[in-house]
Length: 417
Image 1 (cartoon, one colour):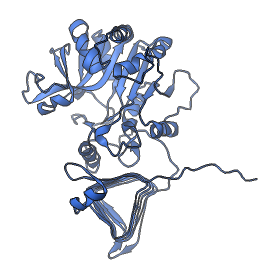
Image 2 (cartoon, rainbow, N blue to C red):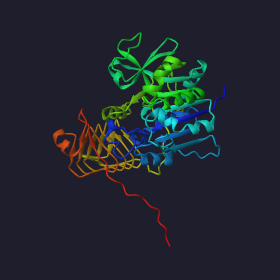
Image 3 (tube, rainbow, N blue to C red):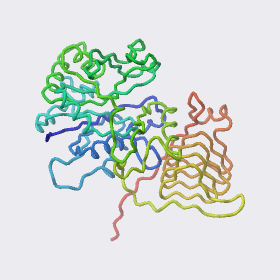
Image 4 (cartoon, rainbow, N blue to C red):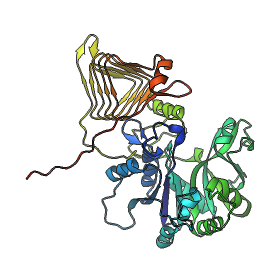
């Protein structure tokens, strides 16, 4: 079966729980894993699944995100159906407002659907870390002749208040949808877990247009898929849940559990980065059949210099990105971004260091996140005295120290006369 598929990526959220990493950038633009951005996961999933017609809906603090899309996600082909285009809020609502909710974001761009005339529309969030073969979800949707299909995954019942929770029949037909309700029903065969929406949807185009129009005229609606459209469709339409645990990624060994993380808090973001350091990581960045794509930068290889006692550049159980130099410094159990310089005698442990940071001699960094362009003076200690750290930095509830980024100079082209 040949289908015309149009994708929308919702990339306009504020990401307030990731503050201060979202102080100057949208959540989908937050760096991850040394060289990537969070949005790279959903875009890679779409492209690897053969979906090349993608609109990225932006809104808050979008400049960093727009630059990343320019650097890494501009198709070089000439086919009109192959594109990744960022779309800011178009103010197409009667009140000429910003996007009021996820459904309103699509409604304000309904002209893009009408002019493309796709068979199905994929609407995916941009702020989760996961691998997904979206073709399988579309096949599931078509086999059941669904109006809409929601990707879902079991999560602990204590997290019901953080997700949309689905009640489904054995064949996947959704009978009820509960948005962030702590009292939502558990799974029939597992009292300790609920079936949670991942915020990823496949819609048959006529059903989507009908439901968007219906929602837009409802003055009591918050114009959100989870709060308004899906609960209503569960009562009236052919709404199905696709179990993400059944999804299979080419190149992954049979039986390996699928990886999905909501990195909405500093703690969740930190743990997801730390997951990458394992000998056999739950999230495999090295699967050539399902590559994680990102911008390509002209950075040299990472370099480790000096082999002297007490002054040895080395990294253990860590990820070190291109252009970084460990000049006599030690890195252990950490994720290091591009262009980082770690000087003699410095020790970085259990930390995430963003691009272009400079860590001075004999500095010690532990359980910290350093945003881009941070300069740490020699002999500075971070992560060892949280009371002192709170006077200068943001410290999360579990004691992760976040150092806000410095400002990098804007590089302008020069003209020699």
